[in-house]
Image (tube, rainbow, N blue to C red; front, side, top):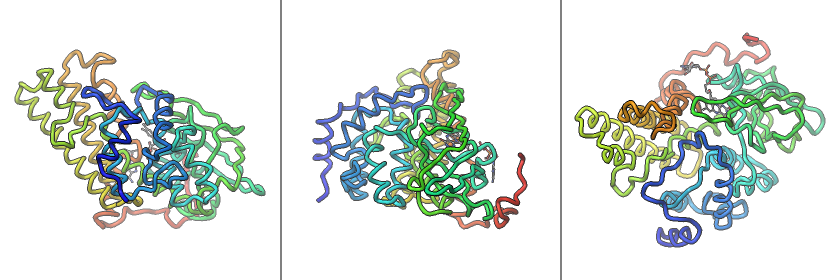
Length: 395
Ligand SMILES: Cc1cc2nc3c(=O)[nH]c(=O)nc-3n(C[C@H](O)[C@H](O)[C@H](O)COP(=O)(O)OP(=O)(O)OC[C@H]3O[C@@H](n4cnc5c(N)ncnc54)[C@H](O)[C@@H]3O)c2cc1C
């Protein structure tokens, strides 16, 4: 029988502190890289299965149905939640994919350490020649007995500096067209042959990396899904990523009870909204914020506990628009003081541009919504049926 909201709060109240009125979550962990508080937080919730309620109880969840899981996630907003950005790939992308595609052994090996925060994952998809056109990934995986030998490089790998595992798409058959010869692997990031080089972002993040992979051996038991299923798993993983980015509160405070979000209250309290032009701009940001919330609710409802599908792209677009409107206006309203590093909203401002790129660019999301939601004609493609080995490349 499903729990009531009261029972959920009763249980969470024993484990967590109530969220303070002036509490702000971090901006996607920007500038923080705090691994310890997230690990402690996940550890405290794992026995009750509160963090991933829809996962099976033997893997750190509590077998909740989608409605109960959504009630639990909604209730968690009322408590102090640690910065879970370092754990995001494991909890939001790898976990759901393992549940849908992983073998029983793989689920047993990886899910619980994701849920309790003892193992962190990164996503090794993008390459220098494969970003928006991800199917162009060229990392090679060659079979050698019960193992695969991987060679190539990945780039823009968030969390690469501290991950235990990498979810890595590689080419296992270059004679197939580019979407068909890919396979997904779980790569142990401490393997000989992995070299992780940090790239610092303009918001101060230092976990962002390029990863060089030279003769790295991966056991066939660490292959995720069937041989050649890599593209399908990639698309599924990205749909989860876009829905997750779309669904984030982004430190905006909870206005589910009908109140105003905390950022709007703060602008008002600082006297920024006396000017009618500023008020009008603030209302535009608020409308984008509400549209984002409603679009995300719609996408969640359509997914109903399953894979979010292309609706996640619509949700991501809305959330990026809302995030950037708020971040950029906040900077303007702060006037000259807003130019200082460390001023309120500075981190959001410096993170803003990346929101339109990470998880797939705005243009690519619009293509997905156009083709897969609205049914518009496909973008012309000249290389869809050509074997990967015959494609023209820049290097
Ligand atoms: C903060 C951040 C974190 C990231 N984290 C990760 C990560 O953890 N793992 C990972 O694998 N990747 C990660 N990425 C990479 C990200 O997914 C890619 O940057 C993104 O997919 C775009 O690829 P690209 O940078 O190669 O740009 P390109 O694909 O070269 O695009 C350049 C421009 O061309 C446009 N464009 C390209 N194709 C089309 C088209 N068909 N129609 C219209 N316009 C088009 C794009 O919109 C863009 O404006 C991250 C990126 C950022 C910024």
